[in-house]
Amino acid sequence: MKVKELVDICADPKCESFIYKGQIAWQHGPDHYCTINCFLRETQKK
Image (cartoon, rainbow, N blue to C red; front, side):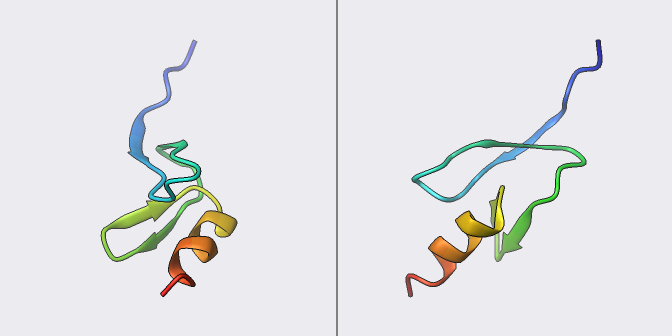
C-alpha cells in the first residue's frame, strides 16, 4: 500500500481538507486551497 505524503491543509476555514503531494491545489500567498471553489470563496471575500 502506498502512503500519501501530506503537504498542507486547505486554508478555507469551511473546508480544511488535507492536501497531498501530487494533488492539484491553488496557492495565494502562503495559503494553499484544495479546490478552485475554496480558493475563490476565500480570495473574493476581500
